[in-house]
Length: 311
Length: 231
Picture: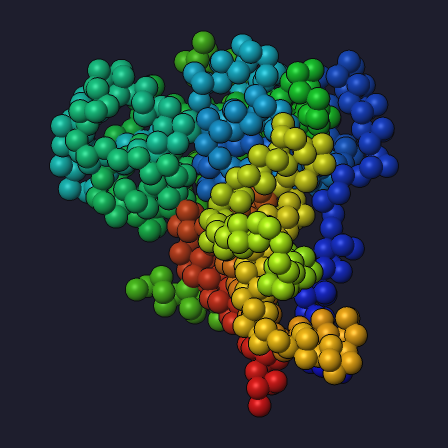
């Protein structure tokens, strides 16, 4: 039969199907479900910050590109899995999209860095139990030739005003935490966006945007962690840093299970507890410190918001 | 230039060393895209055949829709599937979003118009009187079908190659519905995006080379089967 000729093709195509059918670990553990909801009740009423222990299941974490592009989450997620058995599905999008996923109940927890945008979602009750996790800072990077003479400017207002006249400036343009901060800085400097010379929006993550700014010899605003992680491929230099309103603060939230039915409360709370745990905080502070000679993130769990100039 | 050369060296190193991470991502890519192609074949070949041979009102409309579907941007398919499967979407309770299964669904939808379209074209290229001829020679209904499919084998295999090539190389839908989750739904194309935005250009290039080699190997196999008949 001619079928014999097709056999290798069919086998090739059937083999993976068999594999996906047998080996797919994505299915929610149906049998463990009642147990999970029972323990979620217990944690909700008895202990607001459950200690690490076997929790199991999966959860969706909506977060920012900076935590992914810097490699931090690749270091944290496997440890969390070891400690609790929870598979974290990390969805790296801009802070705007991450918050929106939380507001729709499409995620279980969010890790974001735009306190001004976050407030709206906390007020609406979509995000609860916010915890300060860490910070680093935003820096203004640009071509070494520095046409706007940003280097040594007296404050960030002067920096933004100078860039506005010379340009070019590459913006994320994606409602991310960095983009939110950038818009805030233009506003503080009293610069009308439309008047910024050569301002372009990429609509992409921090890594991609840095690469584009580099190729175009343009200025951009970046978080320090992503810049350091990509520095070896970039000619862009840090031209301005250290102003108090350039702090980049990360909070983690649980998506309100009372508002959104499908939320995996137990897993989400375990994730929050894990992030603020002293051992994890130590890890965050030391992350790639040896490699870069400076910290990419500074651990902040337990500190008052006011210590970072918030609220 | 550096990234190209370094990427090539890195690719050779990773392949020769049998890097576990690379093997995992490559295997997952084959599993997901292979499954989607297989399903698209199962649904698309009979449908394409029916469209080619059948005569019913609205046939031209359906064929046009299929032809439009052949050029459907994967990222749009991804967006639609995402909106359906996301928790707040109509099928959110299935908890399929950000799984390999969701990726198979999206890739199936991308591949199926390709398979239908190519199959229909191949079957229509057969002489119109062939079915009657086979019937006159005493072939039963099923046997006629089988013989026709055999005649159209070249085109049907081309349909499968087009479908597989379409899904293994797409990134938009896989990114949106799969989420590019490390160790779970990260496939070669989405891994390339991640490595590029991390500035790991050599790694990205290495993954790209692996993807090309894999796509080539599968097509070589299919082409070999296809062409054996010609000799």
